[in-house]
Every structure is written in C-alpha cells, then in structure tokens.
Image 1 (tube, rainbow, N blue to C red):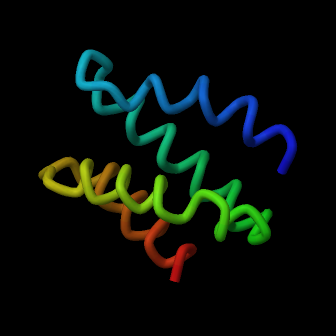
Image 2: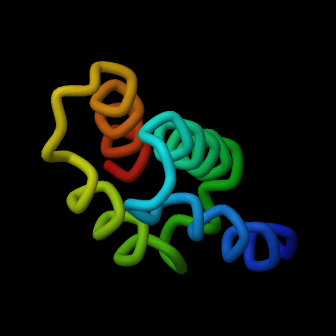
Length: 76
C-alpha cells in the first residue's frame, strides 16, 4: 500500500484526455488489479477511484468498459 501512494500519482496523469484511450485502459486495469490484491487500500482510495471510473464510463471502447466493470466489481 505504501507504493500505491507513490505510483498512483504517476498513473493518474495518464487518465487525462490528452492521452490515448489505451492509456486509460491500462491505468484503470492496473489500479483495479492493485485493489484486488490489496483490499486494505480500497477504503482509502474508494471515492477517488469511483470518480475516475464514472468519468471514464461514457465510452464505446470495449476494453475500457471491461476494465471499468471489473474495477466496480472489485470495489463492491
């Protein structure tokens, strides 16, 4: 969990609209897997990650939608 606070900041910048959708797919997938393997981090980052998921959920990109659905399942 100590590494998430350091690397998370670097990953989140790739969620910006100036980056391709493939970057958003990668970041959301990586964060979802991190939370899956470190559930203690979920209460700390829940609101921030949920906002990221909701912001990116309005897409037709199947890979992004798949990672968002997986991440919502992890948060649930």
